[in-house]
Length: 208
Image (tube, rainbow, N blue to C red; front, side):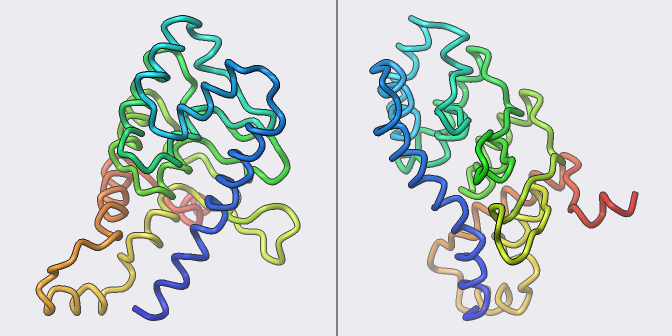
C-alpha cells in the first residue's frame, strides 16, 4: 500500500498540472466574457449555466476550445461537485466531439476520455464511449521534455489507478472489513468498464 499510493499520485500529477494551467489560462488569456463564463461553468459544475449557454449559442460553443486546445468535455473532469456527468451529457447532445485532442505542447495529446479516466469518472467514461469515444486512442503519460516518454491508453491508466495489480492490498482490505470507501473503487469501476468495452493496454496493441 505504501508503495502504491505514491505511484498513483505520480500518475495523477499530469492531470493536476493541466488543471492549474487550464484555469489560469482561461482567466488570463480569454478576452471574450462569454468564453470565460462558459469554461469556468464547465470546470466548476455549473450545469444550468452550461445548458443555458449551449441553448443560446449552440453547436459552435459546444466545440469551443481554450487557447491551449481543451474543450469543456475536458474541463468537466476537473469538477468536484458531482456534475461532470450532467455537463458531459449536455455537451454531447449539443454536438461536442468526444475524441478532440488537446492542442498545446504540454497537453500530452489527451482526449476527454483520458481526463475522465484520470478523475475516475466512470459514468462520464461510459457516456463518452456511447457517443463514439475511441477507447484505445493512445496519448502521452508525461509532457514533452520529461526524462521518460511513455505512450499509454485509457486502460493503462485505469489499471494503475484501480490498483488491480496490487492483489495483496486487496486481500488486506477485505480482511479489514473494507469499512472505508476507497478512491480505487471508482477507478476499478472505470477499469472494469473499459475492459468490458474492449479496452486494451498499449503494450498489447503493439503486439497485434
